[in-house]
Each structure stands twice: as C-alpha cells, then as structure tokens.
Amino acid sequence: MKVFCATQPVAFRCFAHFGLAALLLALVNRGAAFAAPVGEIFARHSAGSTLTVDHSTWNRLLEVYVVAGADGINRVDYKAWKAKDHGALKGYVKALEATDPARLDRAEQFAFWANLYNAKTIDVILDHYPVKSIREITINEGLFGFIKKSAGVGGPWKTPVLTVSGQKLSLDNIEHEILRPLFKDPRVHYSVNCASVGCPNLPSEAFTGAKLEAMLDAGARAYVNHPRGIAVSNGKVVASSIYDWFQSDFGGTVNGVLSHVRKFAAPDLAKRLDGISAIASYDYDWSLNDAKR
Image (cartoon, rainbow, N blue to C red):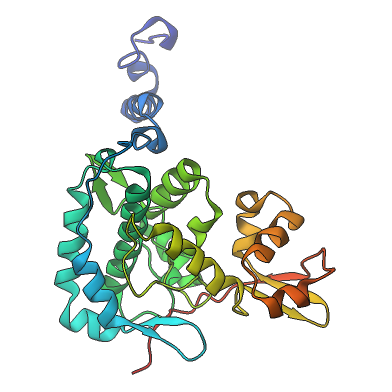
C-alpha cells in the first residue's frame, strides 16, 4: 500500500511511504518546532526581589583552589580539587540546578548563571582530569566526538550537562542563549571561564548580585590590561580572539572593540593605543589553566 504523506496526520502520514525512520524524524522535528527557545524560557525575572542564592560553598572552593600567578593569570589546582573536594563541587552544582532563577532580580540572575557556568566547567574538567586542554573533552558525541577529540578541536560546550527549571542546558545555552542575549553586556565575556590560559581569569570569589558591577569591571580591567587580552608592540595590536569571535558584542566593528578596550585600559595601555585604529591579529591559548604545584 502506498500512502501519500500530504493526506495523513503528521504522526502517521509518512510511515507507510518512508518507514519508521521517517516517522521518528517527523516526530523529532515536530517537537523541535514547538520547543520554546532557551532565552525565552529564562527571560523572566523578579524586579525588586531580595532573594539571594547561597554561593558560600563555591566561595570556599575558589579560595582554596584558585591560584593567582605572578604573571597575572589565575590558575586552578585541579589535581588537589579532584582529590579532596570534587564531591563538594558537585553538591554545589546540584543546589544551583534546584534554584528557580525566575525568582531572582537581574543582578542576582547574572551572578547565578555565571557561577553555574564556571562551576560546571570545573566539574567537567575534574571528571576528565588530567587533560591538557578542555578541547580534548567531548561528552556523548560518539564517533564525531572521538574525531574532534583526536584533532584537539572538541570541547564539552554543546552537550546538555545541566537541568534548570526542568530545562536541559549545555554550557553554550547558558553563554549564548541566556547571558549574552538577555543581559546584552560585553562584560559577560569576562565572567565566564573556559578553563584555558587565554580566557579571562576565573575569579577567586563567587559573583553575587551585590558585588556584580564591581566584579565585572574588575574582570574587564584585568583582561584588557593583560597581554593575552590586548598587546601593543611597535604600534600594532594583537588582541584576544574573543574580540574577533564576539565582535558583535563589542560594537560590531574593530573601532567598537578598541573603544571598549580604551574604556578599561590603564594609563600606560591607553597611551600605547593612542592613534591606533586597527587590530593586526588575534590570538588565543587553549592550554588548560592548570596550577603547577
């Protein structure tokens, strides 16, 4: 029997003609079509809310295992963390997953998502440690993930690893569908840490709504004024690839990026940037920000 797909209900119209595979594909596509975007699901907030999230465990862990280097880079003692406190980290992540961010005001929400992103990133690293780079890690991606891992271009960012308010989330969901579009603040890029030397520092304390503005500005200044953020030599600028990958968040042009950089530049860097209107090249170090103890 040959059934014409256009004359049947969506759940059955293709089965006889194309078989079970087509039916399953139709159901998946139909479900995807009705699924609300992640950003819409988490767009709500409670203006004026005084509710805060307990980040004391995260604070303690950061104080113990984040090592501030003389070179201006915060590194993480993953070896000791995995041996002594991985369970405490997992407990903290679970507690955040049980939080309803819609009950928080905007600043407390930002702190919630940034802390959750950073804590889960560390958790993923500890699950796979030792590794030389986060890009060596792939999660549940089969052969394609194995190939990416072998080539050193993988990473855990697209795989759902969290559940908040019943919604499965990946790290990319948090960064690119919640933090960036909802808050529209370029300082997002100084708040989320990808466990790499080239990334802005993982803070040595938890973000909170009360301290958010000061901490975001401090993170921006620390990165902009460090050579891995902006380096000027012989009148040429080498910038972090972050300013290339996410140029749209920094004004959408090179001039926009340089204007943002000048806002946070210390006097010495500002002087070296005087008269510069181009970025010569971009660079990024994906080496794990692992403390050498």
